[in-house]
Image 1 (tube, rainbow, N blue to C red):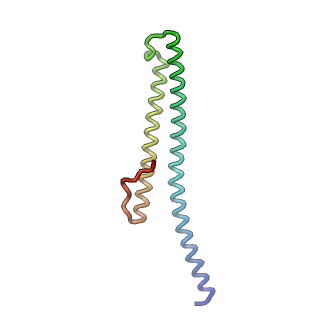
Image 2 (image 1 turned 90 degrees about the vertical axis):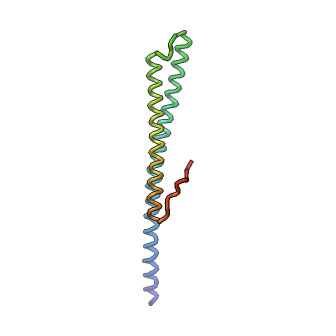
Image 3 (image 1 turned 120 degrees about the vertical axis):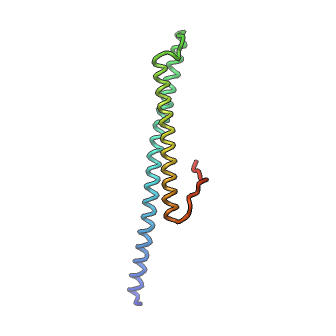
Amino acid sequence: MTLWELIKKGAEDGLEAMKDGLSVFMAEAGKTSRILKKRVELTSVQGDVRKAFIRLGSLTYDLHSRDEKEILDHGDVKGLIAEVDGYKARVREIETEIEVIKKEEERKASQGSGQPPDLGKTDR
């Protein structure tokens, strides 16, 4: 084999290895991107929960300071409680979506590697 053939073969092998590495990198980037988007959404909804709690506390204190009776029956208080409950439900949904993405990616990775997924693994 001539020097040129050796160089050419080495370059082809290197290019093939680079393609394999790039496809693995892109798959990991896609997984990370999906999870990151969900975590950003989760942080936003958690911020909405905090804001709603602040408004609820402020309103409750205001009603209490005016000697209002039956504060929990007040329409605005009920509305804010419902808002908080809605946000909390969305937080649980997003957390579940993140776990589903992680499990999908583990399953894909284990199928590609021939290894069974690590069922006891947690990332927290």
